[in-house]
Length: 169
Length: 372
Image (cartoon, each protein chain N blue to C red):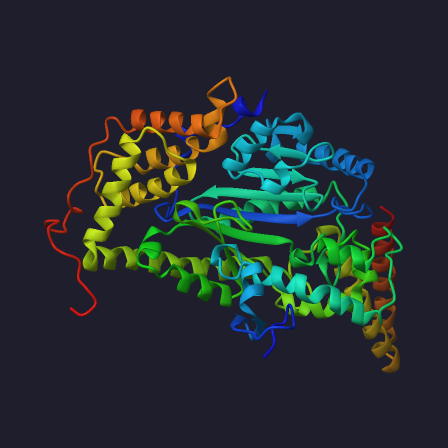
C-alpha cells in the first residue's frame, strides 16, 4: 500500500478514526507521518490532515480542472489550496461540489442539526406551517368541505402576511 | 484602564473552587460566527476588516453580559499585553499576532471573551474553572442569542453557521477541557489514551492549543466535528469521554502508588528540591516540575500547601508574567534567574514532601517489578 500523501513510499503508519458509524482511514509512510506530526500525539488532528490532503484534489476533480472563482469575493481553488480557509460565506455555494466530499469525510453529517438564529427559525416554522396549510386546503377542496377550506384560506392569508412582514423587517 | 489593571491577579483566579478541579483545570466552549456579506478576516482587505470590527465591537460591548468589560483594538495592546493574555488562555496565539482591524472584548469576571477578526469575524468563548462544560455551553448559547439580535450572521439552512475553515462549519462549536494528567504520563498510558480519544473523533492537544507541546502534563481535549450533530450532543459526548479520562487518571495514580511508589515519590521529591532550591530555571522545566508538585499536593504529600499556590505559580512564572514585574527588558537568561528567585521565595516556608502518602505505610518499600 502506498502512502496517500507522497504516493511514492510504502505506507507503514495506519490511522483509523471512528465516529459514530463512520470510519476514516489514512495510510502514511514514515516520513510523511513525521512531517504531519502524527508521531507527536498531542499536536495531531486527523481533520487537519484530511483538510490538507483531500480538499484541493477533490475540488479540482469536481470542477474538471477549470479555475472557478467566487463571484462574491474573487477567491479561487488555488487560494483554498494555499490557505485551507475559504474567502467568504458565498464560497460555500461556489465550491459546493468539491466541498461535499470533504465535509463528508470531516464531519458526522453534511446537514446542520444544531442551533438556528431565532429570526430564521421563526420564518422556517412559518414556511413549514404554510406548506401544511396548503395541503390541508387541497384536501378540504377535494372533499368539498368548504367550511374547512375557507378556514384554511384565512389562515394561509395571515401566515403569508406574517412571513412577508418578517422578511421586510 | 489597561489590561494589567483589569485582569484579576493569578493569586485570586488560581484559588477559585470548582467541580473536579483536581484533574480538570478549565472548561471552555467557543462559537465561531461570521457576518453576512463580509469576506472572512483572512481574505478581507484591511478596510473591510476594520469595517467588520466597527460593526461587531459596539454590538458586543452593549450586551448586558459585557457591562464593565475590557474592550480594545489589538493594535492598542503591546506584545507583552498580548502574551499575558495568551498565558492566561484568554486569546489564541493566532489572535495575539493580529493588529489593526482585530479586537478583543473581555467581561469583568473573565468568563466571556470575544475575539473579533481572528480566523472568523467572531470567536466568542465562555470559560469556567474545573469541569463545567454544560454551564459554559449555556452561557455562550445565551450570549450568542442576544448577539444575533444585533448582527446578521452568515447562515445557511443546510450548512448552518458558515465559517472560514470547513472544519468549523455547522455549529461552529469547539468544546474543550484542559486536563492535568501526570498519572497517565508517569504510568506511560497517555499515548494509548490519546489514540483512543482520537479514534472517537476528538482531538488532544498541548497546553496552548493546536500544534503545541503538552507542557506540565497538561492536555486539551476537544471535539473536532461540528456539522451534523446538535451542540448539546457534542457537549454530552465530550463530557462522557472526560468522565472516563478522569477515572483513568485516578486509577493510574492509585496503581502507581501501589506498584511504583518509589518512582512517584522520587519525581515529586526531586521536583520540590529543584523548584525550592535552584538559582536558574527555564519556564518549561518549571511547568514540568510544578506538575509533579501539584500531584504531590493531590496525594497529600504537602499537608501545608494548597493546590492554588501551585496553580498560581504555574501562571506567574511564565515569561510574560515574569517580565511584567520588571521595567527593563529581560533576556531569557535573566528571566531564568529571576524565576528561580521567585520560586525559592514563594516556596521558602513549604516543608519538603512527606516520605509516603498518608495511609500508605512507610516509604521504604521497593517498586514492584514486572515478574512479581
